[in-house]
Length: 513
Image 1: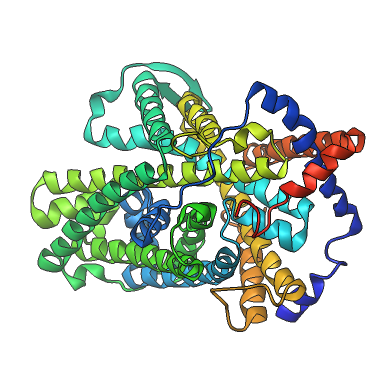
Image 2 (image 1 turned 120 degrees about the horizontal axis):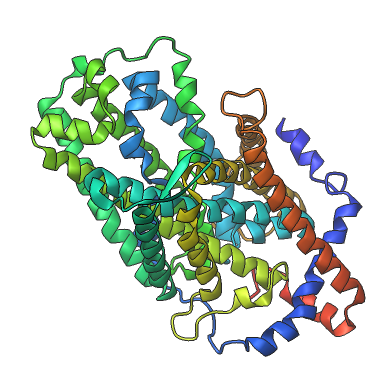
C-alpha cells in the first residue's frame, strides 16, 4: 500500500488542473496594496521565539485534554470495560502517533507558522495546500466556538443558579442569558491573553495544566486507596464491540497535537526537539485518558456508573467521602476547557497568518502586533466569533464540532501525502527529526486517515448528520471556492509587479528567516 501511495505522488496524483491554484496567490499582492493602505504594515520583525520544552508540552497536551475526561469516562467504561477502555485508547493513540510521526519530521524540517499549510504547499502545490488549510481552519474555529458554550455548561454543574432566563430556543436547545454572558466574557479574556503574547498564553496553559494534574492525582490516589479492582470488572464489557464504540471517539479526543507545528516559529528549541515533543504530547494525552478511565472503573461499581451524571466527579466524591473532591474534579474539567480553547486560538490565528502570508485571505491577517508580536487580527476575529457563539445554542455547535472533526481528518490525510511527496521530490532536504521506513510510516498514516474519514460517512455509526452537519461542510467549501475564484480572477488581471511579489510570498524554509 505504501508503494502505491508513493508512486501516486507523482504528477499524475496532482493533475495539471490544480496548477491553477497557483493563481490564487495573485490576490495577496493585488489586494494587499489596498489592504495595507488601510492597515499599514507593522514594524515588528516577526514572531518571538520564546517557547521552551515545558511550554510546548503543555500547549500540545492541553489542546488534547478538554472536558471529555471529566464528562465521558463513565460512558467509556460502561461500553468497553476497564481494560477495554485502555485497549481503545492505546489503539487509537497508535493511529494518531503514526500520523504524528509525519508531522514530526515535517515540523523539524520546516519550523514555520502555519504547519500543515507550509508542508502541503511545498509538497503538493498551492491548490492542495489551500484545500488542506481551509479545512483545518474550519476545525480550529469550530472548537473555539464550541468551548464558549461548553464552559458555562461546566460551570452550571457547580453553580446551577447561573441561569438567568431563556432568550430563545434554536433546534430544541434553549439559549440562556446567563450562559451567553459567561461564554462571551470568557471569550474576551482568552482573546486578550492571546493578544498579549504567546508567553502569556503559555502561562495560562501552564497554570490550567497544573490544576488538571492536581485533579488527576486526587482521582488516582482515591481510586488506589479506597477503590477496588473488583469494581473494574468486567475487564472487557459485553459485547466486546463496545471497544469500537470508544475507539472511534479517540481520534477526535486527540485532535490538537498539531497546534505545536502551528506555533513552530515561536519555539526556541532545536528543530529536532519539536518533533520529539509533539510525539511526547500525544503519548501523555493517551496515558491521561486511559488512567482516568481505569481510575473511575476502580472507584465506581456498575450500578454507580449507571446512575452517575459525571463519573470522575462522582468517583472522587465516593472515594474521598466529600463532595468537595468531586467539585475539584469539575474545576479540573473547566481548566481542560480553557487549555483546549487557548491552544486552538493559538493554532487558528497562526493558520490565518499562514493563509494571509500566501495570499489566500486578506493580508491584514498577517499583521503582527508591534509590541506583543502576535497575529492579533486573526486572534481578534476568532475571539469575536467565540463571543457570538453562545447565541447559537448547544445543538448547532455540536453539529459544528462534528463537522470540524471531519475537516481535521482531511488535514490528517494531506500531511502524510505531503510527507511522502517531499521524500520523493526533495530527498536531500535537511530533516533534523528523520523517520526510518518513510514509505511504511507514510503509507500507514494515509490508510489510517482514510479509515478515520470513513467513520464520518453515511453508513457508519458515527456518520455526520444530514442535512445539518453536511450543510456546514458544504457552506465552508463554497466560501473557500469563492475565495479561490476571486484570487484567480485577480491574478489573471493583476499587474506583473503583483506576480513578482507573489513569488516572494510563497512559504519556504528560508521565508521570514
